[in-house]
Amino acid sequence: MTILVTGATGNVGRLVVERLVEAGADVRALTRDPSRARFPQGVDIVGGDLAVPGGLADAFHGVERMYLFPVAATAKDVVTLAKDAGVRHIVTLSSGAVTGGIDTDFHLPVEQAVEASGLEWTHVRPGEFMLNKVWLWGPSIRQESVVRDPFPDVPWCPVHEQDIADVAAAALLEDGHAGRAYDLNGPELLSKRDQAKAIASAIGRDIRVETVTPEEAREQYRRLGGFAAANADFLLGFEDYSGKPADPHAMAELDLASFGPMPTMQDAIGRPARTFAQWARDHADDFR
Image (tube, rainbow, N blue to C red):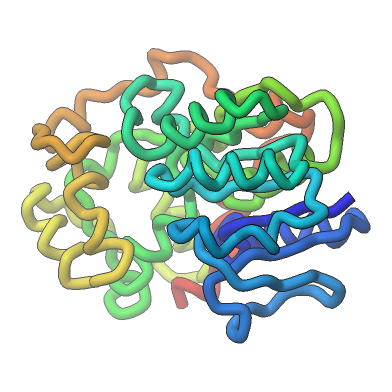
């Protein structure tokens, strides 16, 4: 059985590839630039872009199961190609925002395209990635040992990227996951202040937490460039999931504790979810 992993060099996709290889699966990795891809021995690396489905026919040849990175604009065409090639099960990387009803433009259309195909499907819906802290906090921690945030005491339950990959790989390798949508969060509610303390413990250095206005945080993110700049307005609450203007101060009123226990990897595949403290140790070098 050949499994195709799209978005194979991404933060989750590359981990999915590793887990599939460890399990002995035949893996094909789709990437836009094969010359720069670094995968375990035996992985079949193919070039292609989900945004240009016309060039993907060869990538689907002989594939039975597929991990689908979300590209809403071409999802229908990509899924049609996959079905015509004989793919039987698609595992989508989606978002917990679909469950919450606030994502209607990005991940939801991909889920809908997969379900409408009649193929077996599994949706993996993570919430906030712990990994975001590398892009948002990494520079200021490395340079100044400081975290600046508008609402440092608001708790959240970010998820380890390793947990997301574990669930996706299990859905690709095992029976029993078809027709399931798995919401994934971290195992504990932690304020930004406590997350900073966990990183401080991992790197063996104190980190100061400064409260700033949402506007000041937005300027800071924009100066960082990359992921932080591209997502500043959304991450700080200046716009909603659809890009419409929103009130950033509303984020301070969100009480996740009122929702009760949040679903984690434990609920999906029976293994304990990784804590933020473990993630901080895994990524300590990113903050030194």
